Length: 184
Image: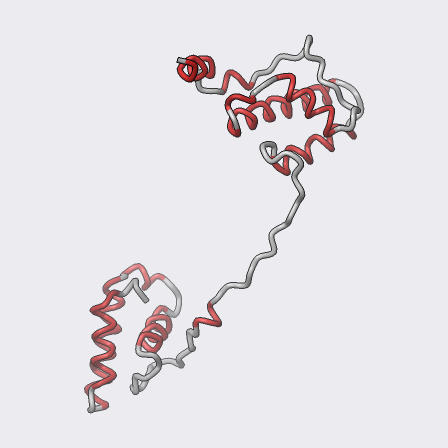
């Protein structure tokens, strides 16, 4: 347990090697006090003494023969290992947009035409443009966003480039100056 350091580990090993049981007991109680003083905030936890005694037993590899004031719970490495997480695996058509944007585009296709759909389309298109900028600054193109929206919605939604205004450029860090520096 690296949080206690080498000195505490050596003190516990010294306590294990002591021949007199009373002396081992006093040594273990002193080590417990030292460990609590190292982390005084631990006193706020319920059953903090149980936790410290479990740590002492674990560090000694359960070889410390003393009268523990509480029952010791084994902290085996196998029992503390967390279970593996099953991450949802979604096939993403274009990784620069991510799963959430693709799902939003599918929902956009289901919306009935109207003002709400146009607002949603504007938000999605601006987010797509920002995603393109973050992925590759050279591929940030309004036409590409319009084509991708049409592709994801299977032609149900088309972005009218004449009436649509992208707001994403306002959030970007001076894209034109980055482009000029790159060309020089």
